[in-house]
Image (cartoon, rainbow, N blue to C red; front, side, top):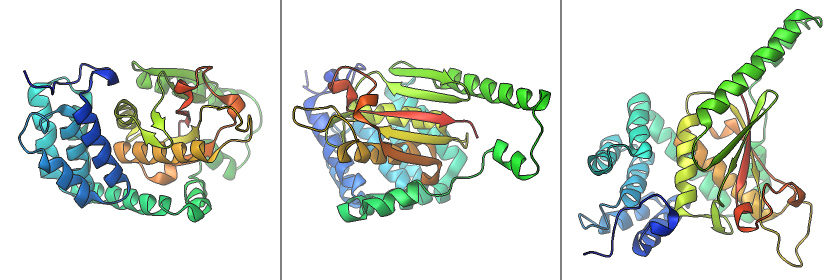
Length: 295
């Protein structure tokens, strides 16, 4: 029996050669080298390794980012032929049907632009300015611009409506591996497992978790704040945030943008303070948390 087998769901069940191939190809894609990533994935050809769902899923995403929607669809169909209930493949095909090649090419350009900027540490501030710049006005801001409403029943009704929208959003986002909590008119999302192995390198399971969440965010036009976290180590600052946490927020925002089809301007990023880490376990704190506001 071949040493390559399909993933049963946990990261540890993924064959090492699949993990290495996906990690190398994903790294090239993040650096904007989509040709190199696709060439690496194609080298697996029609072998069992090339037919693994993780390899085919990444190949489909690279094709989609290049505007090659037919090729992307074929890869996802190959996944569904063996795994009819695969959520990433099903959502990918649905998104291709909604967006078409023009939107896919636009997502590729956004991904490439951010990846190129991320290669130069000196431009971190510029990237943050782009991501954290002026946000689209929310509905309550638009109402205020048209004239301040007096306190009373209308204000209470508006607050109640915001809370109802947040509750409905939380219901739609809940999934295994996610901790979804409603705080007034916002929704906080935390991940049960760490998303990053080290630095800003996503684990295969972490990348898939972000992709699946991004699919659920698509088409909703939400405001999403991405807070990066880092495990504290002896001798490191105990507060004030970190560059590693900031890069994790940037990487997660890019993955969510690509998967959802929403522009990068829908996401703000920052480094959370070490004291705000979601878990006592350092490994689980190699992650991000999201605070989502319905638009």
